[in-house]
Length: 229
Image (tube, rainbow, N blue to C red; front, top):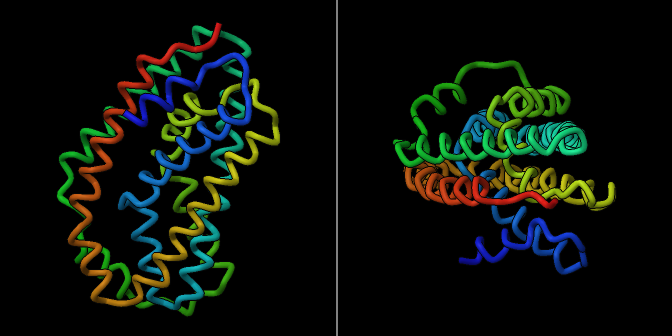
């Protein structure tokens, strides 16, 4: 119900601080679910964190830098599409909804992360990791994740209105980057403890399924949302 009430306000013609804050709150909620959902970034974070806590923290920085790049080209491309054609924007919106349905159904069927596979990657012998190597590994892992582009297109087509100022759009993007850095910094610190890491792996199936239900609901809402005239 809260999600419905929030998304009902996404396409208002006049944007006050309340509307902007509510959309920002929606961004934090939806993106927060995506960030904590197990995936390639988590595997890389665990792998590098086992080298050292410092390597894990710099890997988190690499994730955050990649997110900034995703956000930048997504907002720029989305604004161009909207300015050019409402029809193209509608196509983009339904493509985003279809993608959310896809990842939602896939997540509902998830059996969780393969802890053995993650451990094998973590245990493979490697040379000591420098700060630059850690940043680069995080950046590349997130940047070339094909799910990231479609996720941001689906998310921002609901939340980032083209009439928002550059400063507001930048603030939304920086929020996503800081959330990624913050979460994976926590992962780096906490998951250095083997018992905690094992419990997280075991719970990953239910984390995935909860996220799947959330993404399905969001996909339905996106498909029913009307753009401003």
